[in-house]
Length: 256
Image (tube, rainbow, N blue to C red; front, side):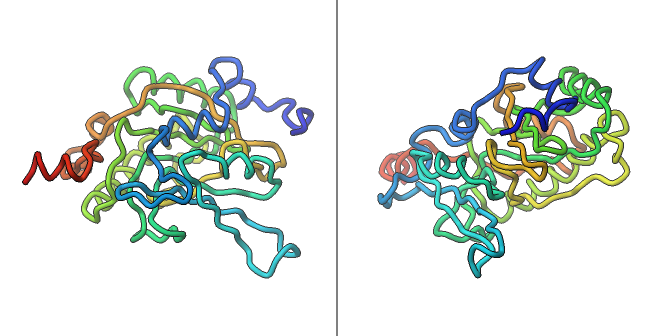
């Protein structure tokens, strides 16, 4: 992308100075470890796909979007990185080709959008709060072109049972409000409360300004217990379980 467009970009300057950059495929491999998603052309119980949505120019086709199935090899992501169209992706696996909530199977990360970073002091305070346990420390920070996407990647994905989804949505809402505070954003009075299933611009994909989103390593993978420690008791996720590492046969033997 055109480096001239990024001159004077204090957000990107700050991130590239103090953090290690993650290449797009490295970033997504950290969310979807090798062997986690379904193999291309292979149906296997307990293995699902990620879905990317490419927004097409109106003159290109009658349809506005094109969906891409992301399998375990991440090969389709490599092709999408060459696209100049907007591409949206959520850290969630799905059954089939629809991103409908009822098709969601596992949640691999919570992603929170943070806008209104109008001066460098907001960045300094954001990372100070993360490093001192005032707000949770994100696993990765993504420069979105206008602001940041904070990715909290789970050590183990959570199944999308309705009771878990409802609790996670409430937790994400409360965390968003705490992260959007007067020290981290000029828009702290108007936090963007987004769906648990919100798609975010693909790392390495095009932004509104014509440059590319970029990811930076910031912290460790996290657990629900960790996120729970930042909210009041009534907002904690209390009924949950992580994805089992047992095969169906092993599970039957252990839990007859």
